[in-house]
Length: 116
Image 1 (tube, rainbow, N blue to C red):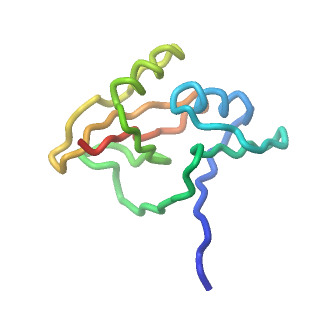
Image 2 (image 1 turned 45 degrees about the horizontal axis):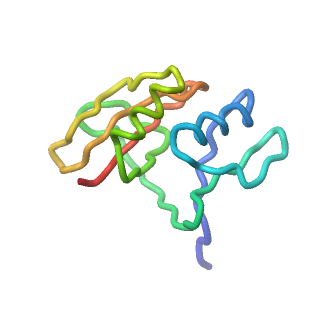
């Protein structure tokens, strides 16, 4: 037996509206939707990970998902362009990552991180 994928499911009253938020902030693409569920992907990438944790680090709440980005500042500006603000950070953590947390329109806590 081999695991072939891991996919976090975030609750959403309007999956397509939430998909548009993730498209606007992270450039993800909705590659499939059925109205009640939308699948977002990273264009050209297939890797996923499962992380297990008791907290989010630095005493923060555990986010529902972590999204790695190559330019945290650009992502932060894209977030602000949607009318949202980070709820934590941006900050460089003692373990060497730079990150911020956001709450998406459905209230899910998201860790946005880059490895400098």
